[in-house]
Each structure stands twice: as C-alpha cells, then as structure tokens.
Length: 150
Length: 92
Image 1 (cartoon, rainbow over the protein chains, first blue to last red):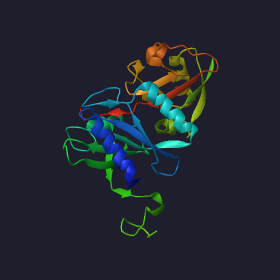
Image 2 (tube, rainbow over the protein chains, first blue to last red):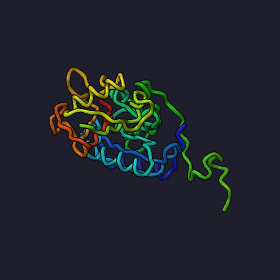
Image 3 (tube, rainbow over the protein chains, first blue to last red):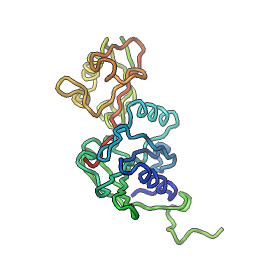
C-alpha cells in the first residue's frame, strides 16, 4: 500500500498535465526506512518523448548524492503515460531497478480525468498496490471521514 | 590504483549489503574485474557483450564514463566510482 499526501498527488498530476504529450517523470523522496513520501522532486525527461522517459545522467547523480546526504531514499518514482493506461509497460518493468520504491503511473490520455495507480516492480515482476490518499500523515490511518475536528 | 565504489541498493545483494566497497585498477574495466573477483555476479549486472549495459550509469567522480571512454575510462588513486541504475521507461 502506498500512503501519500493529497498535495503530492496533485503535484504529480499537475506535472504530468504540464508536460503532456511528452512523458513527465520525477521522484518523491522520504526519510530512509519511513516509506513516507515527503519531498517532491520533478525531474527533466531527457528523452523529451511521448513514449519514453529517462532522467538525465548528470541530474541522476546529483539527485542520489543529495538524497544520500539527507538520509533519504526514492520512496516514489513516478512517470506519466500520455496515450495509454497507467500500467507499467514491458520497458518499465525491464528497466525498473529500485525494489523498495513505489512506482506511480499517471495517465493523461483523457484530458479531463487522470488515472493514477501504484506498483512494486521487483526483478521485472509487477505487483499493483492500493493507494491511500491522506490530507496529513499524522492522521494517515484514521480514514478520510475520521479526521478529528480542530 | 585504489578507488571507492558506491553500490546501488539493487546490487547490494552482491556486496553483503555494503553501500561502498574498495576496488583496484587503472581503468574502469579493471575495477569491474576486481569487483567481480571479490563480489561474484556484479560484472554481469554491469557489462554485456563487452560494453556497459545501456541502463546502468557509471561515473568516475562527477563524470559519466560514457563521455570518458566507457570501460576504458581511466581511474586514479582515491577516485570515487559511482554505479547508478538509470531511471527510465515509458509506454513505448
């Protein structure tokens, strides 16, 4: 299960819409061991393509050094599909190399309704997981209607 | 030449969980052979048919070796070699 704040979901969808029809990509980093996405890092798609994405190699090195220095890991790795469903392609599964990341796909093929789904990809095997969108991680397990009144 | 190699999460099964390991060599190819001698299985994850895998990035200090001779890239004493899988994919 991916538990993620609504503002981070909105940020991924906004990025995907902005770069449409090219694929958008990025990372949401979080503290090592927390499984909690916190820091939104949109990346440049060096391929600038509607059917492929790749982080620029220099950007990739800077990103990982920065996360290492902050004791962060890539909790979410996201990208968009702009003409197909939000499900990992064979290419996605083959290249995926972060066994502990949540791979989030956003489809922007419909101009009004986006589709967002999350997967684990380990050794090329794709496993879909539920996505729980929360307003705050503090109340993450209380359900959307049980947030205490202020 | 003694260098320090940063190992990405997915390859740490080959290094007993270590994030960095020492290795030796004058070129990246020699460093990878030395890695293989101590951490069997690593080379096949990095090199195929005598060239680096398309979706594995290797850096000597700050430079992507693709722009510095690939496997023949020179390394010097004290250099940091960083291995990072590409973050890539797409609908294609």
